[in-house]
Amino acid sequence: MSNSALSSRRFLIYLIGSTVSLHGLWIYRVALGWFAWKLTGSEFWVGIVAFTQFAPAVVFGPLLGVFADRVDPRKASIVINSLSALNMLLLGLLTWSGMVDIFVLTAQSLIQGGLDGAHTPVRMTLLPKLVEKVQLQSAIASASITFNVSRLVGPAIAGVIIAMSGVGAAFAINGLSYLAIIAAVAVIKLRPGASRPNRSGDVWDELISGVRYTVAHKTIRGLLMTIAVASVFGRGALEMMPAIADVVYQRGAAGLATLTAAVGVGAIVSGLVLSQTTAWLNGNAVRLSVMAAGMFIAIFGINHEFWLAVPLVTVLGVTLSLCGVGSQILIQTLVEEEVRGRVSSLWGMVAFGGTACGSLIVGSAAAAFGLQITVVASGIFCVAAASLIPKHKIPP
Image (tube, rainbow, N blue to C red; front, side, top):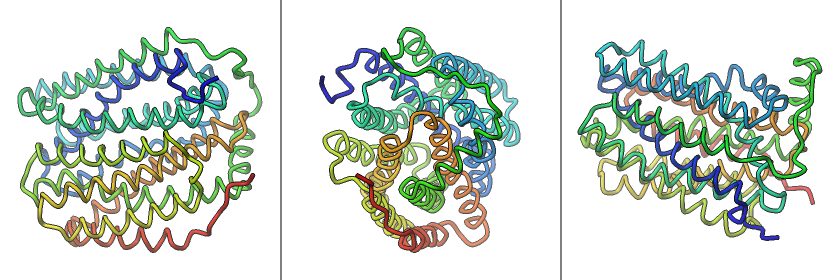
């Protein structure tokens, strides 16, 4: 049997549908951040809107993990993605009708954040059921590559769509893109022998047992601490790119699309490396990647030249993706099947919730103290906090 997940027909169908949907996601994210900035001209509101995309994962993450461990992940994925499609089409219609102000945009972003938060543990529970265990690392790395290819291509498409048709069209196209992943999940079947959920116990007890398992597992606990630092101080600072592209570099939506795509290029490089081998991957490598990211964020904060910003954020894409994807691979390899959904939800809560909190903190600080000095401070805090995390080894 090949160790490559690409040899699995089930996984290939899923990957194709996911790739189309992910392009829509990045079109949406670029349009959302840009629209928030153009509506208000406020770093604070850019941070608020970014916060709403990920905040539901913080509030409801553990409960969503229990949900993922109890339901059929195929059916749950179809339902959640269908609701996401409807929400995005509604937002596109409201935007075209001129009925969207910053409060409506924030509310719609919060709804979508809730749907995305619910889908994260479902997606992470579904993936191992599509491939054999020896193919799991390849599957995660391949999914990361497609995610970041869409991060590269999606913003470029978003820039054209926004310039030609406006943000309403970008929102609607994202809604239509969900049809691809819905169709893919509808036609695939779980691999033979994949366990199906059959739980009816107390929700609270299952939630507590999942948290206890995570806290007691030193390696998983250390990885979650590392991803928390990267999300709050690393990803949180990058959520200010709509303001940076316009205020610092004066490049508008096209500049934002270029910077976002550059992050995607770096992340693709990281994914390609991880897809080849993970023999070197451990908790300390993930921690060091976060420290490197902090240094480059600080440099990005003091930079005033757009030509230098592009390679800087490309390197940031490499380091932050190494942390995000590397931690996923390690956790998915180590976690026991019966708690996979709950542990995955805690990863999502920390990764996306940290980004939400970081974007809110950075946005508020930028409005009070200045944009660039806040980004520099975020980078310094990222290095300092990551250096305090104890080294942890992967058990044999």
